[in-house]
Image (cartoon, rainbow, N blue to C red):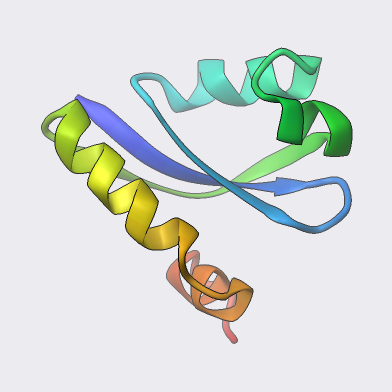
Length: 81
């Protein structure tokens, strides 16, 4: 099982990624070892996650979401537009 997730960063940007364990991945991001993007900006909290049956479908969904505007990502996370 894979998950696509959105994380709010310290500068209020939104990071999108995939993982097999959302809690572990947030902890990695918070320690600064998750990615260069979150290491530079800090990871605050998970805004949203969704399950996918395999890595391929998770990667496709991640790519789709990354193309979205911030307002659409926030709407997905249930935070309004």
